[in-house]
Image (cartoon, rainbow, N blue to C red; front, side):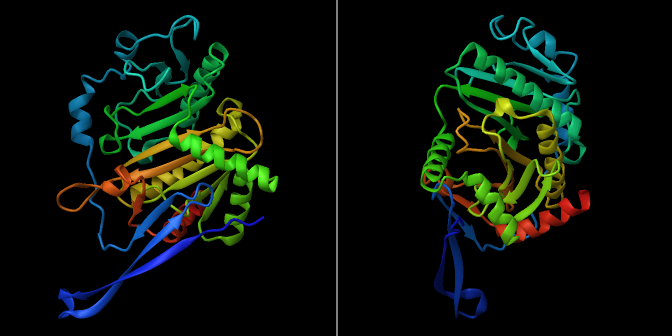
Length: 345
């Protein structure tokens, strides 16, 4: 079964003062997510080059006081109750996971995965990321054994302050709850309905359709374990999706699948860096069961400020209308990112 990629193109007419008041029109696209139907807008706004943020000075100023650096992390971060882990924290390689002192939900943890205070986009390595994800999975597995109600789980990352990161030192936010977030609820419900009406997994069909069209598909990693595409209806300037077919729950993802996910993130980060994006939001989502309606997937959206004023890339459309704006055409972004994947392959 094919997936409808619905868009509406609107043309606004006006007299252009920069062209001696000649009649002019500029288009805007409204695109609809093929799973949820949620709309997003593509604007054709000439923003020019994105200003490149330099975090080096901020990193130097905060390093001495960073609670996540190796000389302080074991002394100043909290410990889990014995019911979660007798050791108090989860360790794997350089990764350490401990409770979030200001939790987002019933189970909320922070996971650092590098002893280095400031890791630039092009300095992340696949083993570093893999250890971070595997350690996060170990925490989620322990939570589920202790609290079987907390089935809605996610692994999240705010990289740099413009993306919501309050500490420069790279770290994950891991959340488990009996209640779904809005995104989890909407995508899971829609995927279940899709499964009931077609007897197919939406994400399997999406991967196959995107790879057939070759408009937004950018590559695969881990010999087909993770399929990467740019979202048709993006939730930011660029919205990159990595799908792990055949896996519904985060706790069931295998070691080599986490490694394949990490391998795919490296060219994504390299592409962001080439476009002067120096911050991003990332989230990995799973389902609460193994009904084969849902697939584990990750979404990565770069963040930036715009123009001379350092304007936020989120405005009233995103905050109050819950509708994302993108100044980057998804198919153009996919073409550029595909070239990076091919170079890194």
